[in-house]
Length: 164
Image (cartoon, rainbow, N blue to C red; front, side, top):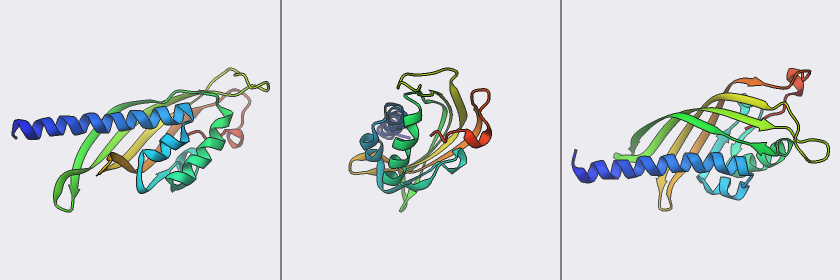
C-alpha cells in the first residue's frame, strides 16, 4: 500500500468516526435538523428493537423529537467502533460499515420541567452503513439493536419509554 493510499484511508477513518460522533451529539442535543443532515438521500434508521420506529431520516427525526421530550438530559456513549470499507460499483472505499456498542444514560423530565432521578439507562449495538457522497460521508442506514435497559423501580415494561 502506498503512503498516499494509507493517508486517504486514515482520513476516511477519521471522517467516518467524526460522523458517528456527530450522530450521537445530534440526538443528545435534540438537533433534529443536524440529525437529518447526517443521512444520505433515502437514508433510513431502524429503532424497532428499542420500541421505536423504522423509516426515513425525516420520519425518524420526528419520532425522536417527540420521544426525547421525556428525557431533557441524554448522553450517548458510542464505543468499540469496528469499521470496514466496502466496494461500491467496483470502487473500494466508497461505502463503509461500522458496528459499535452504546450505553445511553438519560434523565426523565420532572413535572416542573426539571429533571428527576433515578436515571433510565439502556445499551446495545449500532450497525451503521455509510456512503461517500459529494458532501462527504453520510449515513445510509442506522440499525439500533438494544440489548438491555434499566428503568426506575415501579415502572413496568409496558411503561418503559422508547429511547433512541
